[in-house]
Length: 180
Image 1: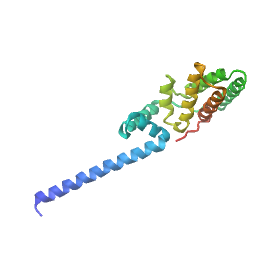
Image 2 (image 1 turned 45 degrees about the vertical axis):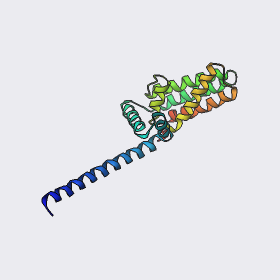
Image 3 (image 1 turned 90 degrees about the horizontal axis):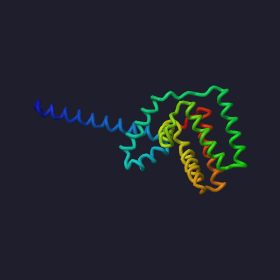
């Protein structure tokens, strides 16, 4: 075998190894993002129109989240929030729409105290998606009912459902359980 042929074979082998390594890295990254974001992965793929764009978005969310100072609440603060939640639930009987507004406010205050920025609904969804992706559908559903309630278009049963949805996220945030 000539030297040129040997160099060509080695170069081709190096290119194949590099290509396989890149492919394996991309597959591992995709698996990591699917595992971490759960249903949010598929939602983002659909929203962004493809896996690569979605993966860039989800990776950016992870990087942003890494910069946040998320903290656990001390037991006394958890008890305080639990008591507030009980009060919000009691208000539901007399004022369902008002109780849903209170629940949204309570969840927002809890997020803020834990260290999540609350720069509006879309920002909250983005930041929560990294550690609480499996609860995000609850938050979306509750937010949607709350928006319709503000227009007088939500039934009492839908408002009850919104309370259940807010409670799912509330409990996860309160107990520092992550759905990863």
